[in-house]
Image (cartoon, rainbow, N blue to C red; front, side, top):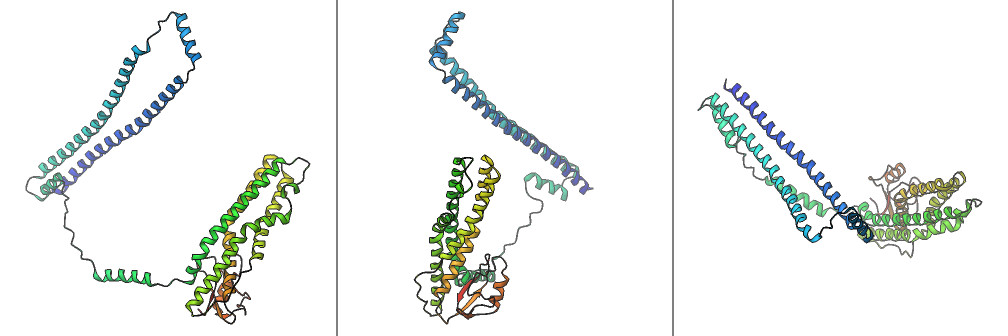
Length: 397
């Protein structure tokens, strides 16, 4: 019987809470609607004032002449300033008076509904009778004390867990840097710099081509826009040469670090050959861009041709990061190979975080080889293909 009365009281308490919540939600919604409307009205009034202030002297004189012609009295601005200010003060006072009124309504509503909830508890407690367990529950509800307030047991920190955390921190500090992490210290920055250089060169080339398309006459062919092939490629070679040379030198520094750990001296390297890489990279960009530009100019005119050329360059800008990574890793491995002395054993390391590399897996499984003898797939050093991110490392791993 007491449990049924408790359930009934609980239902009445939930209904009272729903009333309070609904009232607060309605008041909040009204405020959310009223504030933007007031702001829009203020902005509209401000714009009207600005428009009125922009009246010229001729407009003002025309207004005065119209008033005189109609027989209207000319009012003194100084006498009317005070009443207008008073009206504005009244409006501001009205606005200020309205805001607390809304808050007071919310407070009154919340207070009233809270009182209703307390009345529900009192009625339910009276029905359940005094002195019983149900009466004690309602007393705790009125006082805001949870019914089940079992104290949480004090949990002592586990010494074993603390020691394990400390050991893990020590392991992280003592963990040696992997060869791939060493490489990434160099290549991440190099990839970013080369990618930016490519995008800048592509943007400059795009602007030149768009300008030529706008200025060419109907009788001019596509050759007027694309220009000389050798000069076009040379511009891109100049843009990437320094970054590729830096990647090659970074590879020699990496090899020197690894050889130093093995108490070996690196081979003397004056420079790393990257000119063929720069020419290859320039060709891979310039040739397809020129072919697409000629196709667009022969098949369209005006804005259509401009839009097509923009889309073409946009596509290759999106691939700048991919191309930068490919050629930086190629130049880097060339630098490693150049810095390894003759007769030294070298290993092929697969980058597990990159795309799958079946050839690299075969070369890594084949074990270390003497520098210059070639790995099982015939490669002297990575990459095995354009997307390969494998690494050549001095020593037997």
